[in-house]
Length: 113
Image 1: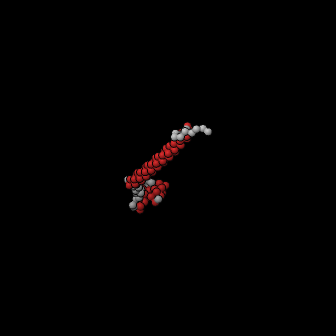
Image 2 (image 1 turned 135 degrees about the vertical axis):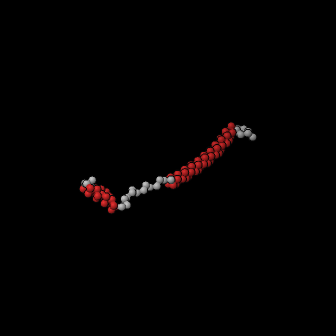
Image 3 (image 1 turned 90 degrees about the vertical axis):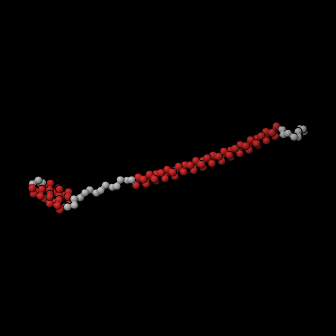
């Protein structure tokens, strides 16, 4: 039987202890790295959401300002207030010979439309 020393571990024991310590350290550092990465990702998502909300508010404010300062619609075209008077003027021009029958009919149709 081999003689066993008491006190210090042998070469295999030292290698095993080193492997356990290294494995534990690697597991702990990996867990810490995952936690840090998760926190960083969560912070980035929160920042992205805040940026999105700010952009949405800016867009809404711009649309409200554009609606407030939009040009009013153009007024409807002016219609002659005295339709009978206009028709009488056309008839007088036709009787005077200034307008032909076709020109009178076209002007009359334009007034009545």
